[in-house]
Image 1 (cartoon, rainbow, N blue to C red):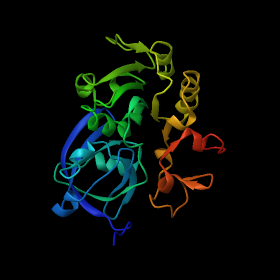
Image 2 (spheres, rainbow, N blue to C red):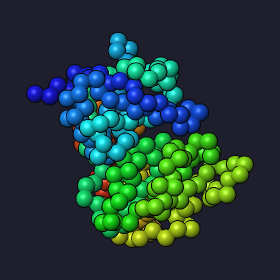
Image 3 (tube, rainbow, N blue to C red):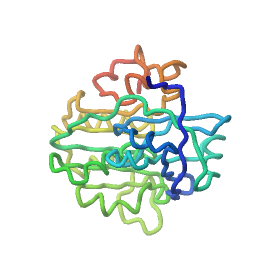
Length: 269
């Protein structure tokens, strides 16, 4: 019987700097059977911690098709735990529980629009990596960051563009930046979005309201707009109740919800 409270030991295999405050960690379970049996759905999260210190939720951001070999998380310095994780080196160990929650819709077809703001690209990356050769749908990616130095996974953009239409924007002009400047909503004024598309959003809370307005103006159905409420994650198993969304818990019924589910819940967005 699976014990959701029991952490497993994972070893750091690679560390890659993404931005001045974000590192990408490639992890592998110490127990080979744990790694062999590890599976996750894009959009799910895990609880990562340091023994005898604390833990916190992180989205798994690697290719789910490679989950039996290793998995990845992005860590931004935001507190004592993340500061300590940033100080770790290759072969150091972390504790891992999960994965928890649901995930993004499966069996995607037609037109897919992924919209990420800042760290919101992290949970979307598994969808991109897993579907680079998927001919069942057309993928658009809208991604915005504050400055050029804040853009994640920059070395992967050329590969992504082989199978997706990638549009980038920065909140403010930066030296040598030749792309769009403005909030992510400005991309909707320049790039056509199909009204039958399935939109998947992840980013800061302030982004959701204005992006949803643009999606509704483009004619998308409420049931075809999906949002990640990963920012509400705490214990991961619905015990602490910090992640309540009306009568639901983000960690048990989410963190992925359709706009149709959330639009009438006060304070959900």
